[in-house]
Length: 158
Image (tube, rainbow, N blue to C red):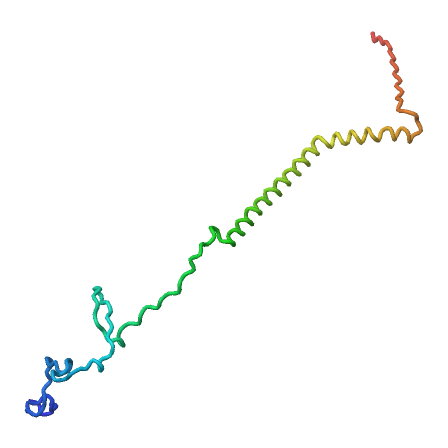
């Protein structure tokens, strides 16, 4: 055997050998007595299969924190802010439709005025101004003298 080996591995009876099967490291000696007052409190917790198993209280997981109660009062069908948005959208659409309809009516009136009404207005102004011109010139009325002369001459080019 190697002379430089530690004493733990030597064959001498004074050294204790390593025994992996020894349970004295994990289990208490049979003569040891454990009193109930020396043991800490034990709680029962569910394991992965739903069975209740004992566990020292200091090793047990913390209990789940109870959530705060929710407010269960009924809410309005539509949110008040959403109601404002809907009202603004409907009102804006009605305003736009009204403005568009009004502009269309103005354009139609201008088109009708330019095609027919302007002629009638021009005739009315002309008829209204004609007697004023006659009075301003000193005449008593609007008499028109027509002189027609017919001259016939016979020519024979023969």
